Length: 210
Image (cartoon, rainbow, N blue to C red; front, top):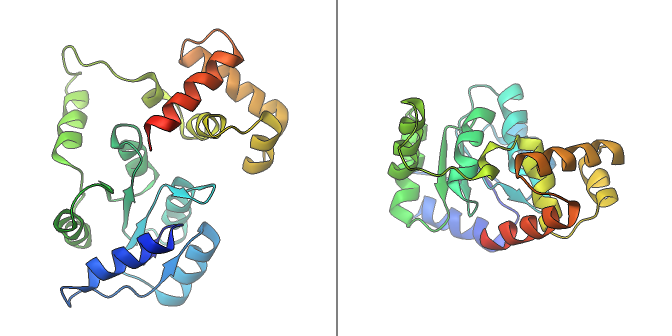
């Protein structure tokens, strides 16, 4: 099953996956709610998920699927930077992470690998994670954004998309006070002095992901 909020991307993925005559896409979904309903109806062997789902966060879908269908493998296929999202996707329950700019053969390789019960990551991401496990790579500068929690990153991204505190609170079903607390944590972790600096940095970061 393919979960992406862009119809053209869903159709393109379907063609790539079905061209070899081995794989069949049993369903397409554009949102978390639709994906969860279709998983129940179609019982897929694999779910391919984007991180950005029309204002929703694909990590939440991965976490839901992990609880409801713990044996169902999930492959993330996203434009979002793997250095920030790959490891947190695996923590959420995904079995692989692939950037959208990778060619079709890489996608098929990732799908086959995940279906065989393996974990798929790019060679660069695999090296980076191994270096971290071994105590860090000398001279390697880690972006402070990588240190944010999933929820902090979600608030940070929404700030970068131009949303105000009240809008973020409504979007994430949180109180305004809770969002303000997250913003304070963000300023501390990102070493920013004020809210204006936080918003500027968030906007620059979101633009850099495009």
